[in-house]
Amino acid sequence: MHFLKEITQKCFGGFFNPFYSILFIAVLSAYYFGITGSAWAVTGEFTRWGGEILGLFGIDVSSWEYFQIIGLKGSIFTRKDGIMIIGMFLGALIATLLSARFKLRIPSFKIILQALIGGIIAGFGARLGMGCNLASFFTGIPQFSLHAWIFTLLSIVGVYFGILVIQRQNLGIDIKKGAFHAPKKHNLKPISYALGILVLLFSIILSIYLMQSDSLIAPKSLLGIALFFGLVFGFVISRAQICFTSAFRDLFLTGRSITARAIVIGMMISTVGVFGFILLGIEPKIVWAGPNVAIGGLLFGFGIVIAGGCECGWMYRAMEGQVQYIIVGIGNIIGSVILALSWDSFSQPLAKAWPKINLLESFGVYGGLFINLGLLALFLGLIAWLEIRAKKKILLDIKK
Image (cartoon, rainbow, N blue to C red; front, side, top):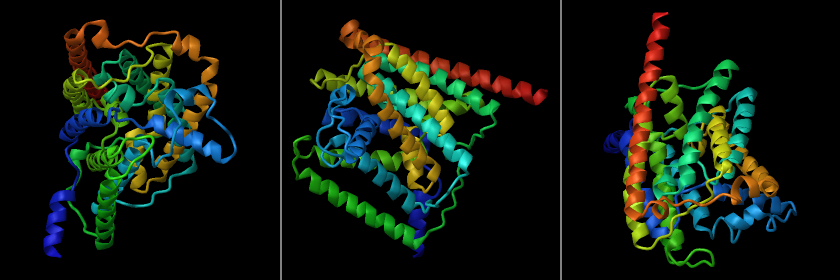
């Protein structure tokens, strides 16, 4: 038992360094794109879940244009996006159990309401912008789609406005120290640890089994591969406590920029990897660069601050037993379904009338690559400026 405690103390005492963890998942996301042909993304699948839930109540959504765009074939168990997300939940649960972090936490009604409203706004904005902090940001920019740049910049503006509302309405906001400052003490809980091992073994066996299966939606072996990637994604974001909301929220509030810088550097690395796979013939996902993306990004950034977490953040926190983030997830699904229902009324002027701009096609293969990397370098400069600005403001407030 002493040996087991020593091993788990080294592996699960404290959190992973978020900087290196983000760089790791950036590399992983590029390989995920190259192997599966899909971006690491979640809200499109959450929207399909919403459509399938409506189907249980006799509402046929197959004729809705938005579901025709994103596709509604198969089920969560036969779509690689669905299986990948199952993997993310399992990976986050494994990390939680092995580190003995599960604790049921039920917030006040005020926080639940805030989480639901923020989740709905974020879900609506994410799907209006054709992606979230992943598909229209972390994995969207490396695929050279202009829409991802528009969404990202407006999301940051949305985060800023969300902070103003939080502060002025006294809604409360949890400003935590970075994960790398977490205490190193780890209390081994044999039952939690045993459950974590069981879930891990189940997940590995399931992944191997799916690699031998076939599906009308995903070719043979891709389901198992998607599950495996999802397991690693979920495990790492949980152990490193990676949340895009806190990355940019904390940049404005405290000037802490390590996570935001890691995200941008990670996208630089991912850009080069995705570029190589594109040269090999993998098609990137390029969507309309219209007002829908700008409005969607603004709403998404605003919503995740109100809710207290982005798509990655609420998933692993829900696996830790934090009910608030389960509510955020429910809100995301509700918001995405509302967007799908209303899509036909504004899709033409806001989205479909605008071009799909691929930087590699607009500026040439290598021209697009260097422009994307150059814009990411400018993005790092913006983060440095926001960091300096926030720290100066804090110093002025202290002097007052």
